[in-house]
Length: 327
Image (cartoon, rainbow, N blue to C red; front, side, top):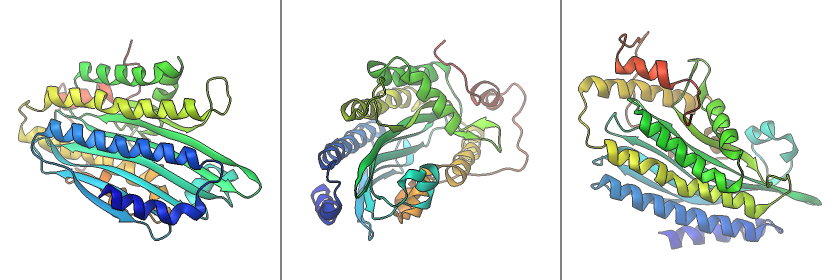
């Protein structure tokens, strides 16, 4: 299916390929397709029952992708690992609002994005994405950057899991600059915050955007691409050990109900605040792939309050405000 995807997604794009950055785009796409393969293989092995099903698609305005979905597994109730490459002659409103200098430019955007919703409440939900963006305009230099990150949303957190998660995030960043982890960690805490709830979505991780320079402030594709690759490669190193440690833990119906309640927060963030969701919908992206981040089941409860001194209360008291997990 990947051969069919490449012929569909790349051939129509030839006339719009960035003249200066064609080699950059090709390098990034090759890596992203390999990353999708690696993540899907590793997660299917961890599940042990279900396999990813692939759905290749094309976008009428330009581009396409391949969505891979796992569901009803031994570990994963539902999840998706998606690759997309979309392009167009004009920028969507959400992008120009964030970056006004992009008005009047054509664009290419490609990336891998994933969300995993496990069955067991003791296994956190997790999200990751890595992406590349380039915009061009006649007579002007191209504008390009990388973005990405990964974050963890536990329901019944274990502190050693959270520390492992952040240690792995730091290991992804450290070879490229001593201040990247702290910067991207704080950016993640700020981004995945629900102001109407006064809480973070989970325990954070990494989030970065607009990356196109090295620590010296010089435009540097190899540096920025290398950091993006490191973040992508470290996701399974961060997440799969937690899955393996928790997937056989027993849970109660009450714990499952709490997991579904907390999944509602995930829905609230993705539909109200997430820039990627808005960008995808405004660029005419494939709705099924954009909204694959939604959990298969979720619930809301009016004026819910966890019981005092319970494990549920501990989530709110200890884990849903930004803090330094590596001290």
